[in-house]
Structure formats: structure tokens, C-alpha cells
Length: 127
Image (cartoon, rainbow, N blue to C red; front, side):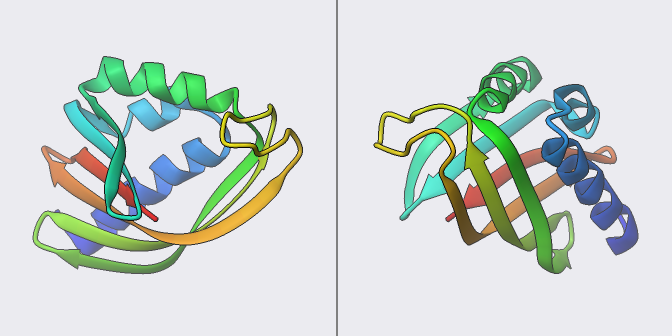
């Protein structure tokens, strides 16, 4: 996969994410996609397969009024892209950790994408 192809695929995925377009996100993913969310070095969420990803992604759309991921930096090494991400969101509901509905937050993190057959085979969101 060329750098341009990888970047375009990731941008399409992020655009769908920002628009709460789960079907659009899924169109970028390999059937055996693995997703992990890592916070402070601990895997807090892991899904395996497109169906599990779809379930989690649909549930996540209910948590936010707005959300946006923006690429700050992009590096491709073979079939792996490391992307520095600026993330902002506004919560739609009260969260178990104490965040109240309407809370705006922003963070910077990194996402690692792997590819196979022109699709994303894994995503690891690290914050």
C-alpha cells in the first residue's frame, strides 16, 4: 500500500467517525479487524471482527453530541501507519467516570493502523 493510499483510507475512516457514520467506518475495515483502546498503557477495550467493531461503534455514537479526530502527523512504515491525532468531543450523556452530559474535552494521542488487502486490519488508539 502506498503512503497516499494508506492516508486516504485513514482519512475516509476518520471522516466517517467524525460524522457518526458507522457504515462508512466499516467500509474501510477488513472483516477480521482488531480494535484496541489503550489508556495509560492499559487496554481498556478490545474488539475482534467487523461485527464486534460495529456493535461497539454504534454504542459509542450514543455517548457524544460531537466528536472530531484530526490528523496532526502521519508516518507509514511498510503496512503500518502511526498517526498523531488531536481529539475533541462533547459528551451526550453522563458517564460512569463522572463526566456530565455536555462536557467538552480534548486530548492528543496516537493511532496505529495496520493494513491488508487495501483495508484496515487493526486500529490501536493510544492516549
